[in-house]
Amino acid sequence: MKNFIFICCSFILIQHSFSQKGEISISSRFFHPTSKNDTLSTLNIIDKLSVTQIDWMYCSDSSKIKLLKDRNIKFSLAINPQVPDSGEYTIRGRIIGLNDVKYVAPWMKVWNQKNPNWGCVNSPFFNDLFIKKTKQLVDLGPYAILVDDSRFNEQSLESGGCFCEFCVNKFTRYLIDLGHNEINDIFNYKEYLNSQGIKVFKYKDNTILYRKEFCDFQRKSVIEFLNNWKETIKSYSGNIQLITNNYRGKWDSIYSIFDGGICEIVTDSLTDRYFQRIVKINNELKKSQSFTLVSNDIDLNLQFLLLCKKYSITAIAPWDVFIGTGKDNKPMRYYLDVDILATLYKNYSLFKGYKIIRNKDYSLLTLQFKKISNKKYIIRNKED
Ligand SMILES: [Zn+2]
Image (cartoon, rainbow, N blue to C red; front, side):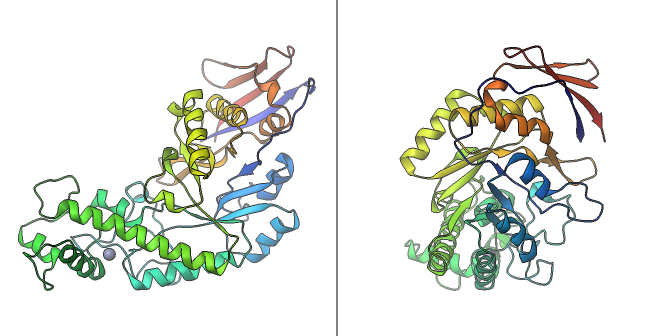
């Protein structure tokens, strides 16, 4: 991953400064420093950027949360389908495929996590666990709880779905309730598929009996689980907002259960047309929506922040943003230079005329502000 060292060359802030209407939010996914070797500091970036909000943070340490409260920072806390049930491990109530293997999200398979396995929404044990852990986070005083990867069993269908005892038994009842008189209550879908020599359920294979019914059942199970969770958490704390990461800003039958979303947009969405559409949709649906960009390109990140400013959308600052899996099989995170971000947040108009000039070998970038003056930022672009 690239690290930008920032040098400011005789640069003076001029022209009219105007403040951002929306919140300045960062997504410090974990509270830095996370260890004595971690050179990053969540509090440092809060101070430098005058951050008012932190989103999508995994933290249950009340002493760290107190540091945010002391600074009047709004924060949302994250929970995901991998919430551990046995120490740091994921043992009980998990999604289990037709081949008896517990589900791991495809993009996480190489991460070597202690808690790789997703919970099954039809497991009463996991249902209780998810509510209990959410309440513990609510007790820490966030303005919102963010469910990271809220598609649960529906997402797992792409890798085979869940055939735990709860899913199998509930699916039999689901088929009978649909009027499938050809089966009775001893029907077992897992045993049936095994008897057909099917090792992995393929959600697009039209030749598999009850394929569509099973997909609908898994999706409806997630909706039922989340609605029950939402009702329980809202009655526990009436003011809490419930949000999720809604990919590309979609509001399907699962994402729509939430009050708002953090949209992970991809680089081809950095257009006025896309932003106008999202603003229109969210106004109609009355959903809150903030954006985060999945890219480590400085130019695209600056374009992203300027577009968010233009459309008054809260942008998650590109600092501690997940951008994929590295060669060492660890998740890669991107940190745009803090001084550039701080300058941008103080004066967006300055950046409207910026231009990036790159050395051929990418060793040096020059950030030039054409409309203002000949003053430049020079950024040395070094490999770690
Ligand atoms: Zn299940």
